[in-house]
Image (cartoon, rainbow, N blue to C red; front, side):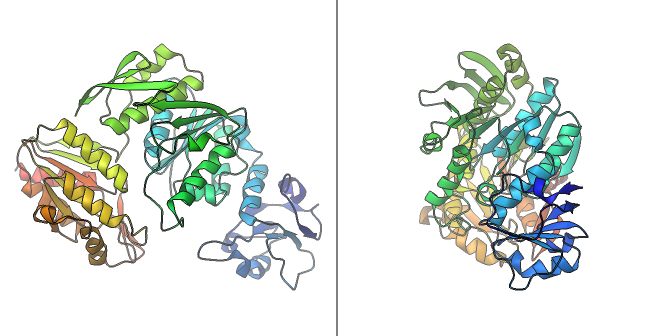
Length: 487
């Protein structure tokens, strides 16, 4: 138990009705989770307004309520705290409640449209190989050193983040690498955390169903760097036209990385093959098991971050050469028939273009490149024709199919994707709504030495249709179909 007064430390209070010298058992922003002696924080969400559930939370035993509007009728014995922004208050309260755990380890946030998962996951892997106890908060999974937990959001809510960071403190974790999404920044989930550093990867078309414009999306990302302390480092991809914008108002120490521009950390691709990359990192040659230009950027960001965190260069280069690819990020297999199947999370136009251009750079053009791709339902619709244009322009054959349709009609999503296909590319395309059948068809169309790219879902092991998730793993499915072709 902790006093309400201690939890509210550094929270800007507008009005207090009742006493803050009460003992609190827990904090919740979901009224259904509230029990006796808990604090309920009423948040105005994009779909639901928590203020509607204040009375319900009190009936379940809430001893205090933090809100933006105090109810007209208050209940005796309950403390009401009015604040300007409940989500900001929740983030600070969460840190206080768990003893400000981010201050007891070195926390690095990774933000940008593409590459967040790969960079955070590989940094976790690298520092584990270096002998440290390490934490990871990612889209794919959450790791508290060697203990794995499922991930539900790219950036969890502030209570969940701090609960895991507290577990990391208890396990003696020294470093933690965390994906920081635009939703997480906008909803103040990372507020109150002490970051040792921040990494910016790139910015391209995504989440415009949530943000009103690309400029707003960019500025939300920038806010993460604006809020870094002067003790932290800010590492940015200066080849991206938004890279320098991220640093404009930051108090953190500024560093840059690039393949094309002058930067503190430079990389050059010497060889690019399906089995790996030969890179020159600041004049040091290293072979890595990842492929493609986008992964050269990822490796360079990892190299720079690890050096800024104090790893010795020679050891760092050795460890980088041992890194293994992340599930669902250019994860590939080669069948006995010499058909290469690649599964990648590419679900934005920029990511899909990067993957397809990487494959085209490596292949001899004597083989077909068959792409299976869809777009998620209930998400940014404006990127769908762009995905269709890129897939049809850069592939030999394309099968448009379902991704996670959610509550949308799959055929409608595919129609939107097809609107981006130019006339000369129509003959390359076909539509198969059932994703499993689409993958099977791609395998049947493939000849020896051909390449199949299955894009969009990557590490996900489910498909969501009308609120129901069923088991669906692209990598397992394509592996099984290719095995059947060998019989």
